[in-house]
Amino acid sequence: MEELRGLEAPVHLALGVFDGVHLGHQEVIGRAVAAARREGGSAGVLTFDPYPLWVLAPEKAPKRLLASLDHKAGILGDLSVDFLLALPFDREQAKVEAEDFVAALVDAGARTICAGEDWRFGHRRGGDRLLLRSMADRLGFHFEAVPPVMKDGDRISSTRIRQAVRDGNLEAAARMLGRPYTVAGEVVKGRQLGRELGFPTANLERGEEQYPPDGVWAVRASFDGRVEDGVANLGLRPTVDGESRLLEVHLLDPPPDLYGKTLEVEFVRRIRGQERFEGLEALKAQIARDRERACGILRSGDEA
Picture 1 (cartoon, rainbow, N blue to C red):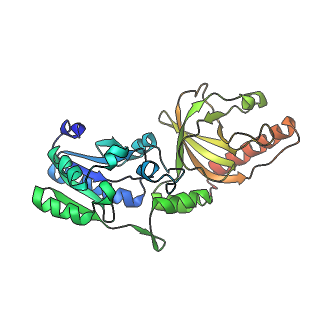
Picture 2: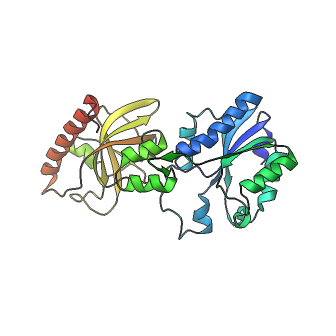
Picture 3: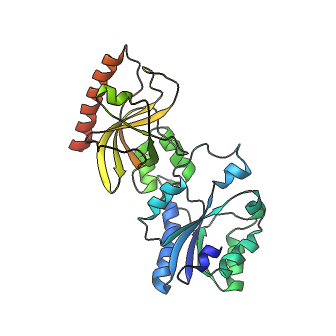
């Protein structure tokens, strides 16, 4: 908690895991930001890394997340927060009693604590909104319990969004996120087959984020403050090797070198599924058609 002591006081905190930073999470975070605007001080997000269920119950945890920690930090940059604090989560942290955790936050300068009304925390999930409310009265901080945000008749949740992404229903995911769904990854060296075919690609390191269904997609990629149109292949590359699942992004106006850069990729529209071709010439011809179709989708606004 020492990191909190170095911030401009008072400190207004949004607490939670915030996987994906969806509209429900944004409501919680917005309460902390509003408190800072009223009272001065710093507004920020306190979360945990790695994802707590990966430590406590990996058999029940999602295999993929909606946003890695670095990606989450980038998303939060648009929400007027002053800081993101990710507490290392391990078996020792899991043993901390809920009361001790809250008392440490207040001792470090927390004036406001905001959380979803059903958020549970601390040893054996012993902390909840009732505990926070009673401790707020006793320790003199302000607590806001934020109700769920609903969409299409159901509460927004990271679980619902992950399922929508897996199903390829990115429109539904975007409605719950309040923004298009994206994944982020570092560009790494591949076999450079795309360059040989005349369509150089940026190969993204496979991280912990949830990908949509395999296939060829019209995409937009953001890096260094730029947004570029592109076409991406997601899958096993059946014509070439069929062994490793990759995300390969060909930008329509590629810069000279992307190695080591982080690309944030928005999946705009799925063009086709994975196919096996008779040889590299047939593959090259199909890539050219895919590129032309992606260009038409992205530059004409035909994204439905």
